[in-house]
Length: 140
Image 1 (cartoon, rainbow, N blue to C red):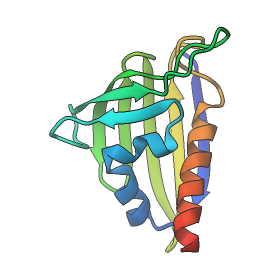
Image 2: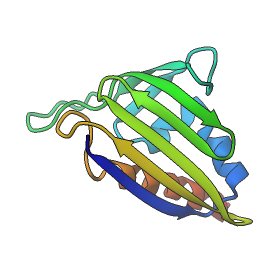
Image 3: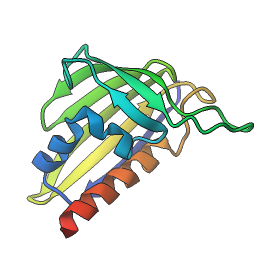
């Protein structure tokens, strides 16, 4: 299956980035195509299943936005998250590394079938949105 990788330096400490990522309800703020999340009672824990709501923007030339289930596969606090998006059949891994006291390098790997859920721009778009959120917080 095709694999796409993107990385970006965020303007926040690794602890701040992890705190944001660890809150399931923040996922729609940075992951493209998700309008809402209904996490199960376990939150961010291996085996947790979150119901995803797509933005439901109809189009004749592209598939609807993501909806379905996110299965949390692995959680290594401050280091790594991985999950599987069942509807799009995507495997996602996000790694964090402190590059300075107030900077975090994030690497996002997405693997899955083309034309079903994987767009080559997906990891870059997600990290750009995450960067914008961290940049906004850094300016406050």
